[in-house]
Structures are given as C-alpha cells and as structure tokens.
Image 1 (cartoon, rainbow, N blue to C red):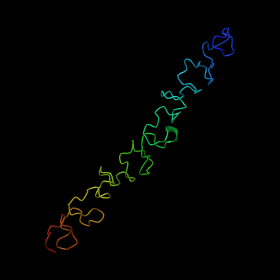
Image 2 (image 1 turned 180 degrees about the horizontal axis):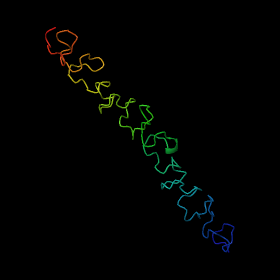
Image 3 (image 1 turned 180 degrees about the vertical axis):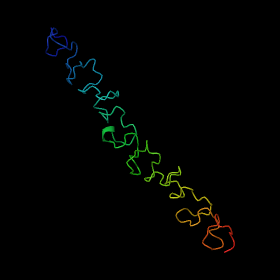
Image 4 (image 1 turned 60 degrees about the horizontal axis):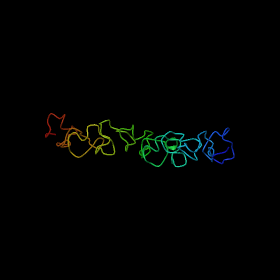
Length: 159
C-alpha cells in the first residue's frame, strides 16, 4: 500500500499522506511544515521563513530600519550608523550629531551649542564666546581700555 502515491510503502513512509515526503529535507513532513522550502525552518526564530526573510539570520529583522541586517550593521540599533563618526552608535551616544561629544563639557552638544568651546556659554551675554572674548565676564570689554577687565577692575571707567 502507498496511499499518498509517493513511491514509498505506507509501512516505511515517514511522511504518510505527504506525496512530497519532506521536499526541503528539514525532517518535517510537508503537510505540517510551517516553512515549506526552508531547510533551516526559520533559523533566526523570528516567525519569517528563510525564503521570505530579508534578514534570515537576524531575529530582530533590521531593528533600526536602515536596510542593513544586524550582522552587517555597524550600529544595529542606530539608523544613522554613527552619523558623527565618533565610534559611538547613536543609541548610546549622548551627542549623536557632535563628533567632539560636548567638547566644552557644558551639557550642550556642539551641534546645537552657540558657544561650542565656551563652558560658560557667553557668561556676560556680549555675543562673544571664549576663546574670542578677552573679558569673558565683562560685557563692556574693558570699558576704560586699561587692559583690566571690568569684572576685576576696581576702577572700571578710570584708566
């Protein structure tokens, strides 16, 4: 008897009722194989069979959406792949668009810091940042021109 007409007698047929007899040779009869044609049967266990899975060995299926699968992606959780090239992926880089990573340590990333090299961020509000501001705490820039900044000059307007 060969009920499924696959050329293997029912007594020796490991896939009764399956005329293809496990065509992909994965050890699962085609009648119950959830990944027909995938001999690895969804190797990354993401629910997408290998023939349809764009990232067949990436269970997260390109988690950051940059069209690069995990094992080829230098930053698998950063869609911009270390945009500022500071060797820190954006998902762990506090200044993901600032290669100097807040150079002046003022907690403002350089790409948005109006005084990227001035930790006091123009303390005297004179529109000049360190290192360009010779009198960092004197908005009048040594008003009496005695080469002593007003914030430390005992006679601010008397040279």
